Image (cartoon, rainbow, N blue to C red; front, top):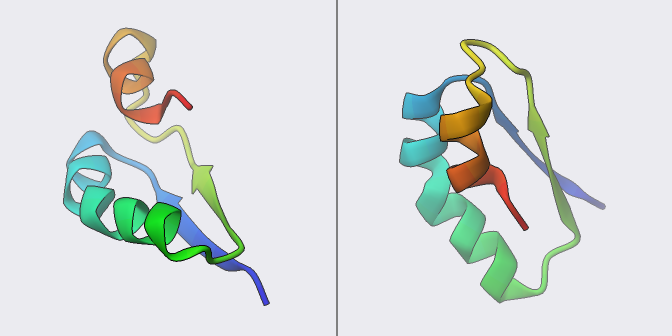
Length: 50
């Protein structure tokens, strides 16, 4: 089973960062969906790069 983390706004990205880090470190099969709500490429690329 995959885990999905859904993000839309910058405050959500910031609030969910501990969850994303936990997913990365736990070996879970997970993915992230960014809805693009209030999207700003110059700001969001800092948070959403991989």
